[in-house]
Length: 159
Image (cartoon, rainbow, N blue to C red):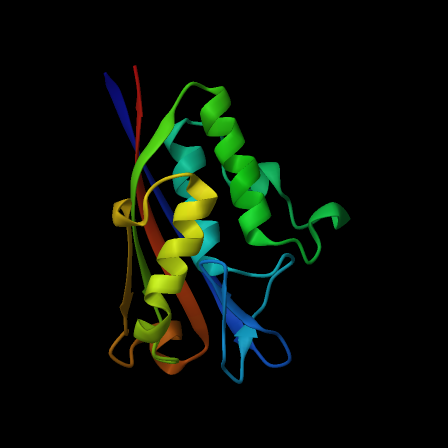
C-alpha cells in the first residue's frame, strides 16, 4: 500500500459584514473572513493539503480568485471538487488533522460540528477527523484579532 502526506496552510483577514464559516459551519460572531469564496480558511487549508498530497497545485490553481465562477462559492463545494481529483488519481483519504489559530471566538463549542461536516465532505468517519483550536497568545495577525489562519495535514492511501 502506498501513502502520501499533504500539508496545507491558509490565512484570511477578519472583516465586518460577512459570516464566519469554519469547516463548513457558520459560527456566530461579529466578524467573518475576507475572501472571494465564503472564505472558510479551515477548508481552504484542507484543500491545499489534499492537492499537495497528489502534487496537483493548490487552491489558487484550480479555483482562482480572478474567476467569477468561484465568487461566493461554498468552500465545501470546492473541497468536494478537490476530493474528486484525489479520487481520480487513485487515492483515498485516511485521516485529517487540522488546527485553527484565532484569539476569538472560542471554537470548542463548534468543534464536533466542524468534524462532522468535514468528515461528510471527505467521505470518512468523524473519528478520522481532528480539528483543534489554538490562540496565538496575542502575537501576530491572529493574536491581534486581524486574521484567522488554519493548518491541515492529510494522509492518503492507495492500493
